[in-house]
Image (cartoon, rainbow, N blue to C red; front, side, top):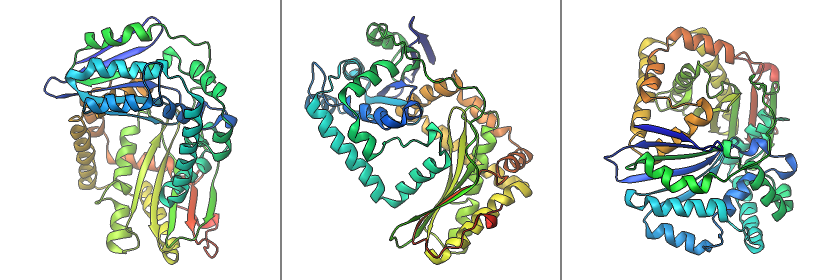
Length: 421
């Protein structure tokens, strides 16, 4: 029950009707995030995301909060490198009310000067909070180092310097130019019908226009800089490790093999890293791997937290397991277990309207079409051990290996020559 409509100006409306659910989730997505910011205005997309909840011509910030609470609903937003999303989840009967509320904050937020200054302080505290949370901070450091010199290396939050100097004029100009109709996707899922969504949103969204043209992308994969080691001195009880290499973009045909590779390497309690580092050696409480995929690039990252004296051993184990992925074919039982793990997670996510809504939008942003669940499951079923072996050989060549270590790093022996798979 997937339906889609494209308005004359390019705004896309996509919906999935699920009659047995009591709720509806609706999101307004703008496929334009941090990677299209200038370094001087880094963090402005996230700043605007905050400000859209701070009052419109018709509602104060408190009235917005009171209204969503009166529906028993959820109203929130998030910003990434390639999109911003404003979404709500309510009982199906409240769809007209919440659609009007979302439309009001999207179009009629008035960015009062006092709210800008108040929210500026909030974001500066958010930056400090991230920096005071070592595990969160090291992932941000890794991303910035891995994509150094490229817009993907910009922080979503921005820096204290950039947030402090962004003006109201900057904010208004950015929203007017970057919220282009061709980048807007209205996604909804749950107990509703597509005709109702069109009736609720078409009039307001048909009038959007923008002459801004984003920087052109060549269509080729973006390649991160070469190898690097970055040591971040902090007075911590543990040494935190983030180590990663290049991966694949969102729409790459080998993405199913990549997700399986990651699951086997560090994607759960039965993964190789969890088994070797935690279960056999007791070197870490937290150890895992994950994949970040963008429209034209990606990275696969290993994380662990361990005592300083065990840091070198944990890194060696991770490198050994990554190297093993490209030298030895994954046994059939291990591959089948990872396959069922991923398929199970996907199928369980279909029981949530907000997950369905997000899936609709991301399919449209990255694949330009709806990918049926059956296609995804078939994609995992088609992956063979040789596919994972070939992909690991391609990705784990050592040329793009980036290592971040945070903690008491002064005595660590981490020269690049020893970092080999």
